[in-house]
Length: 526
Image (cartoon, rainbow, N blue to C red; front, side, top):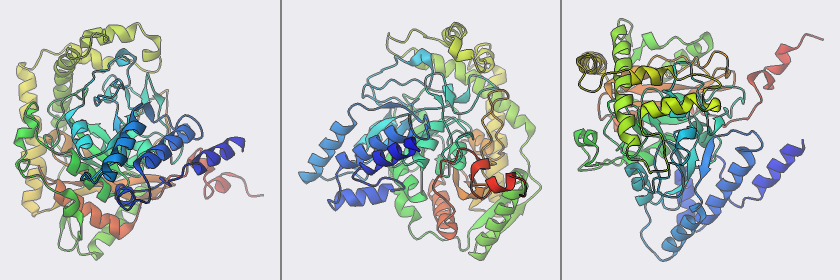
C-alpha cells in the first residue's frame, strides 16, 4: 500500500500527463505552447523512476541519456527562436541498446562484455531521429545479443539489465529481443521507441505488449552501427502505441546510407515517402487480404478472436481470400539457421573490430571465452548458438551461399510474392503470436507464432497491430506484404485499428490469475 502511494505521488508530481500520450498529441501540445520539451522529458524521467526500477519494476531501461534534459532545453529554445521544428521536435523516444548513440551511453546488447562500449557515434537511424528533432531519452533492455546466444535463452533477460517484465501481467514474458522497448512504450515510459528485428524481434514484443510494430523491408532503414546478427535479415523498426505514431517514426527513420549497401535497393529513397500521409483516411473497402491458415491456429480463445476480426474486416468491405493449401517448405527454416550462424560470426567480428579499446572482446571467440569466465552470463542458459556460429566456415562457404539463395527464393519469389500475385492480394494476414507465456527460467522461452519467419527470411515488411486480448493479455494481427509495401500495410493497419479500437492500456497485474475477472473463478464456491 505504501509503495502504491509513493508511486501515485511521484507520478502526480509530473506536470505533464504522458500516460498514453501519442507522438502527435505531444507535438501538438509543444507547438501550441501548452507544454515544453523540458516538462515532457521530466515527466517521462519521473515515470521511469517510479515504474521501471520501483513500482511494477519493469526493468525495461538499461541507461538514461544524461544529456536528455539539456537537449530538451535546446529544443525549447530553438522553438522559441522560431526555428522550423522537425516532426519529432522535442519529443522523447527510446532506442534498443544494440543501437549506437553518441551521448555517453554504452551500446551493450545487454552483455557484460560490452558494458564499456561507448563509441561516441550515432547510428544513422539515430542521426535521422535527431535530425527530425527527437530527444533520445535512453536505451532499452533487450534479450541479450538479440536472443542469438543460445537456443535455450530466456526472452527479455540480459546479463546487464536482468529480466524485463510484461506490464499487462508482471509474471508473463515480454518476448524478444526488443523486450525493453516493448514494455517501456506500452507503459508510456516514452512516446515511442525503436527496436531491431532479425526474425520476430520487433513484431513479437509489439504483439505481446499491445503495440503496433513494423519490421520494414531490409534496406529501408540503415543498419550501420547496430550490433549485428545477420546482414541478410537485420533491420531496425518502429514500435508505438498507434499506427499513426509508427508511421511518424518510420518517416523519420527511413533513408539511404552509402555505407549500408542494402539501402541502395530501396526504389523510393531518392523521393522519401510520408508514411503519415499514407495512413490518413485509410479504408479497408476493396482490399484483398489473404488469410494464411497455416499460421492461424494459436489457442481456442485467440482463434475465436481472430475469426471475429475476420468477420469485421469483411463487413468493412475487405475481400478475404482463404489460403489453406500453402505452408512454407521446412527447408526454409534450416537454410535460415545456417545463414544466421554464418553471418553472426562474420558480422559480429567485423563490428567488434570497430569498438573502442575499452572493449576487450574483439571476436566471437573472445565473447565465448568471456562468457565462460563470467558466472552471471551463463547461470541461466548457455551459449550453444554462439559456439555453433564460431564453427561456421565463412561467407564464401558453398553451403551458406546455397542456403542464402534458396531461403530467399522459398520465402520471397515462391512464397510471399507468389501468393500475392496468384490471388491479387494487398497483404497476407494471420494472428501474430499467441498470448504471453509465463516466464520460465527452467525451460526457457516457448512463444507461439508462425508468420514472422516468412517475412524475415524474405526481407519483406511485417506489421503487427493490436487485435484484442486473451485473458487480459494482448495479441496482434499481422499484415505481411511484398518488398517496399510499408505504406500499404500501414494504411491497412490504420483502418483495422480504427475499426476495432482493440488496444487496451496495461494494468500491471501481478499475474493473469490475480485479475478481477479471473481471481474469483480460482476459488471454491463458498
